[in-house]
Length: 268
Image 1 (spheres, rainbow, N blue to C red):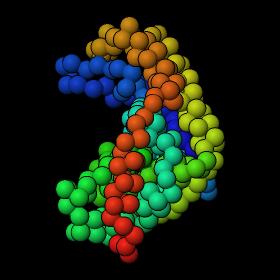
Image 2: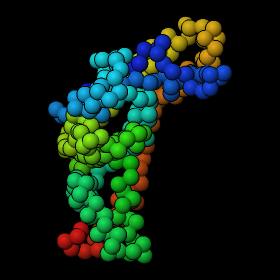
Image 3: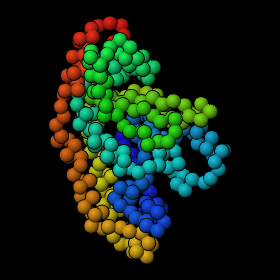
Image 4: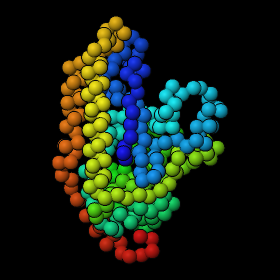
């Protein structure tokens, strides 16, 4: 699967709130482990070097050894981000814009600096960047300097994925794959999104049923079962809404107009 996850056992989920006012909702109940398998590479998977570094400097026994290398976070965050920006990811980019987005970080920064240096807002400079927003996978929640920069976009009948990550503590590679590019047929990507969504919803349906059987009052934890079932029902509809959403081409049209106006020079 492109998107792989495993939910943390229900009994180990940490409630939100203060000790005197603990609660659990659908979002927090999705805490677990996550990674992406892109071709033969894994994203959001810690390298063995960084795991050894952590074991040496912060000795503890990981409670879930089989997922020690996976990112641990709220799965709904990644699922929600993916569906929120799915219309933009699936919107095909012209080859000129796809070429820009496929540049590595050094080249892309050089291109950005060139635009900023040679063009003003009056020239339409902001149009050169706005189309990039939303074509990627969020990693901003990771609280360290080696967050992967992951872009996903469509060009023709292909979906492209590019990732690049700075090294971590003591210049140790933080992830099993630090840089790469991969593309797959658009239909394959859509099937993978369907698979992730359906598997995630099925797992959460089981979790909702399990939650309903527990006496949460005896644990001094508030759980609104009506809201829990409502939120899950709403979540099940999210993928179809994202696939049906119509998205404006204005940002792309403006970017292409800017590039045409700027002309064909070495900086562009």
